[in-house]
Length: 261
Image (cartoon, helix red, strand yellow):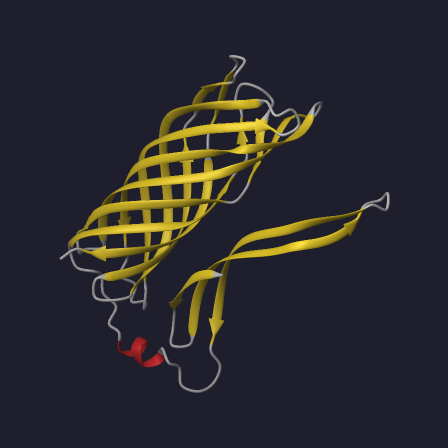
């Protein structure tokens, strides 16, 4: 379990957690009576509200005396990482689609300027990667398990606003636009043949909603939800057929922002 916790009031906290649950050795029996072993893995992202009952709250005095404020103007650098959850990727020029992806990761680095009036702008470079799981050809031919990965690198210009709502943390919303470069390397498990091994560039945008809390005088922690969308990638399959598809990715990230002297 890894996560971040933000105080909402003297007793109420909002926590966001990533959890990896793994049962490595499960003994089962199939319908023919044959025994076999397998494992089971679940990845999840959870949001939790925690309320502390009774007694004095350790966070109470700090929150009661805290004066809500926006960070002052200046340059900063930031890093973030988290889990990604891609939607199915429809192939535009035939009936097939990438029916499922495994939960993957996202990592980003950014440099920007905070204006002190709630607004900030930044240049962000990010990488997202997800394993392919299923390809759905059409109702007649059904699905086939897939392996391989889809990687997407992007460079976006983000603009964000932190409203002064008088809360013990800083909510924010951001919009970013830029370019994405994606590499698709996916194979069919049944035959082992390559389904697509190509790359292309397309425009991309993202919407981010999150909250920030000061950890030290210069260091701030963030937690956010990101919706990331690309235009069409125009690629080719090994037999020469066109393959045009796009990526839509939901993500939950934790980050650190360091204000430069």
